[in-house]
Length: 180
Image: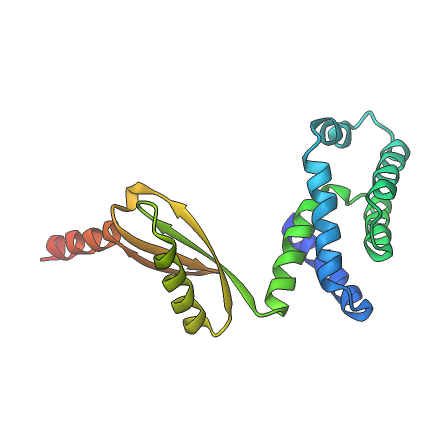
């Protein structure tokens, strides 16, 4: 079974527990904080990757970190559960899926727009508004610069890609010329 499938199952289970607890957003924040803490320490990452380090030692280190972070009991218990199931290495993937599920539940979509050069903030706001109207949800936009698209905009919302780039339009013209 792929790691993302397993991470999705754990994330959905945590989301159900957080819903019952009424703490979806705070659990998302705590989970992000834990992942950020683990990712910010190369020593910690190498420790967890080292098979020579005993599971009990890894568990004790994680418990000390969790104690210092002062997390909500649900997140603390969830991470202890991951430790007991030897799935702590999936924590970053679980957090990513969990955050995505939370945004979806709150009616928020993430969109990525790729442009050839930096756009003025007013243009980004216009694009954001049009995407919100198109999707019927609140859209958070992340702008990526890629001068290989020559001009125009490539928009990705989830699995939907709207390619309005000049590169794509030129490729279509080229294909129609070849077909005659």
